[in-house]
Image (cartoon, rainbow, N blue to C red):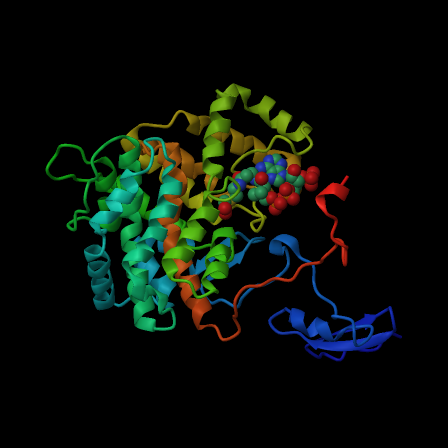
Length: 436
Ligand code: CMC
């Protein structure tokens, strides 16, 4: 008869090299990797480590910011479902929530919006930094450089253990990122920079800095302004993704948040992270028409993984990405203003066929946030190079909340993973004339 389990929150590990058993505590469904170090074959043995490239099954921190249940398709910021936040809050309200843990009171919200609004301007010398880039410089590389350059204007930002200093840099980074982003775009088209207009909302001002030409006052279209605000909310945080992990790892050296955020922007620049919506557009253009969709889906299935249905699948979501659902509904409102993006019909047909197909059902491949965001950005006349930049504007709130949490977390130290060394040891030096 099998003995009754003892119901203890521990894990017993038997080392079959010597038959010894060890008991390690389980806390929040995890064991602490350093607890494995006591599993050794002798005093010289370093002890067992875990090997986990790409952190497939390693929690690098405790966090109270963002919850994702990938199987059920749930995303919550501080416990509030993303759909409700997208419908009922503004981006700055959500940014406050992410940063502070609670929704702001009316007074807190007003003070926060005022504070962000008065910090949208950048030091004039930053414009010389941006002007020095070549006309065809990618705006994401310009953003990474100019965010790092901000560090030189605020040397007090190094005092990362001072809560008021941290708060001030958080305000500056959220307020100034759209300005740097829009300036990078204006440089690429040879237009003079459009300075912030403090009468406009966060998203409205960004549209103004992007698109104002000769008119003395730019009035954003309210539907597009709202849509952009929602896009910022949807991108505001996504727990320990590649760029957030970069922010935390670089920030763990106690460098100032401008340099850490610049590293996060760089991580987001990569095509596997912030660039997939551009790939979706290229794919839809390549398919060309609704009638070609079945043949494309067949190619994907027969390619053995070489041809991907871009904007489908996710490392964490094994269900419909809740952000994609919101964007699909929002697309109609945006297209009501901009005219219908002709690629939408191809996208809808692709989604319809894929969701009925065994290949995609079996692998739990559903549309992710990038499937519809590119179509909306394109309809709003954002050039493709700006797509990851738009992502960075929203995600800055999440990066900073995660950085702030990390700095105050007593469990955290400078990020310093171990390695499994498989190279040579103890070799004798060989001079040039004896090297083959
Ligand atoms: N189209 C066709 N087949 C796919 C796709 C796809 N988009 N994604 C995964 N598969 C297949 C894959 O070939 C594999 O099949 P098999 O089991 O026969 O080998 C199976 O599904 C499992 O895929 P995986 O590569 O092990 O999954 P992953 O978790 O490593 O990859 C992903 C996740 C997002 C990189 C991948 O789904 C992908 O490349 N999707 C397309 C690119 C994309 O849309 N990226 C945006 C992600 S959301 C933005 C963000 O949050 O940063």
